[in-house]
Length: 420
Image (tube, rainbow, N blue to C red):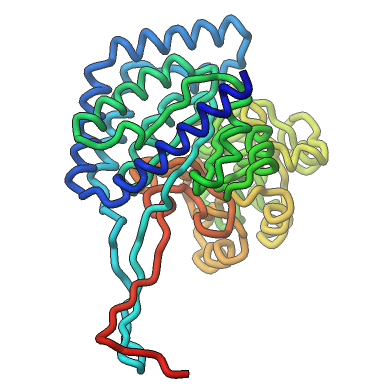
């Protein structure tokens, strides 16, 4: 069986590389047609997508999967509408491939610039959310890349139904169906084989739990765009508007719990701890959130005692750690020590402090007076994202079209030759 898997994955890689040569030079009009055709195919396949999703939902409940993960698995009409909207939004985005920039003449007479180009073949390994199949397919297609998708076994039927729509749309636009290939096996050996395809795959994008991402980062011979944790903070400054602070902190935690951009730790300046924590704690407790605080936080509002481990925990659930700090410098020190360089927020009416916070917090997204839950490719105007990168090389933050491209140098001459 292992040999069969290895042969299958190698074939997928070869087909993806061949397709990448075609999609990489496809016209904007052809790619646009494919995206529109995929959107139409998804719309027409609503009943089948819901039916296949129901199989996954039933299996998830039977196997006792946690409720937040089941919620991420659900595909109802609203979810299908969002997939269609995402496809059309990606279609409407500016075309990055072929964009020329930074041209200048050298004293020798040659003209040098850069051109934006696809990465080539992207392999994406992800869990739970079947809508990621559409996000990855649309962004890869628009950016001129072929992609290999390996969804989680818990969403197998949903992903297969969506992938059939993608194949249908590609064929209708006269593009190779191998431009987007969803693996048709749940065998874990397929991931190991995929990580060996350095001859065909240019970058791996894992999207899922910490265990999955650690495994891929450790085993892959191919460059990886990743983030391990989403330990996001909201810091409420002494100069914050109290009502705004309560609203932002509440939304940052409660809007969605099992997402990487949910707030996991709240930091509050001691000068406003009483005015902010009391009303906020009431709302959070009513929403079913367990509060774990430092001694100073416990002195303001009754809550469980936080342990040292809580400050570095990504709960992805109804738990929030709270710390009262002396000043902004203490808040920044806490974030840079315990955070995961994902998304961190300051709530303040002081412009000078906001600029200092932005400069000193070393995270992929740093926000002023806004919910952490905005750290998302859709909200950033990227149409969608293949993930959020906390790396510092190539792509950082939500990875959209530009993050799936690179640049190459272009040189124009008039017969110039070099003399050393």
